[in-house]
Length: 151
Image 1: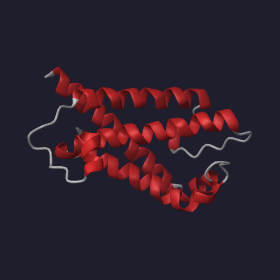
Image 2: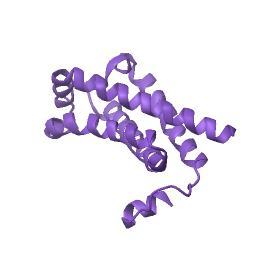
Image 3: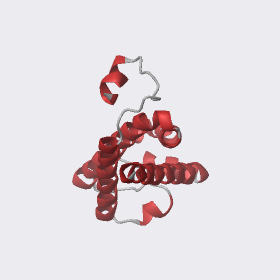
Image 4: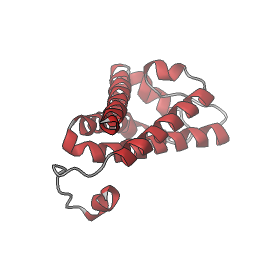
């Protein structure tokens, strides 16, 4: 019972995080695109990433909100948070000018606070993956790559 409640809370936190940041990026799309265009690491990919990142965040939020796909959503949450955290570490380590392309109130965090925030969510995703056990109603996974990730 407690396991299920904690898992529900973790999923809800990720749904809120991804829905909020995706909406924020779409609502201020021009600014988001401009800021990621200033990034020394991803400049050439900025136009594609300006659409892809919030779309992926929405997809992950949807996966987490549909119980049979929750496991895949937790793995995707972990993966994207690791990517975001790695990006922050690389930026802070190697970049002179560090633009923040995060949405809403998250963009007001310092880079150190942002790093801690991301690490917290990486750990939360790990806890969610650990708590989630394969349910009988989980959809069968045909793709070997995804199958390897979810087993």
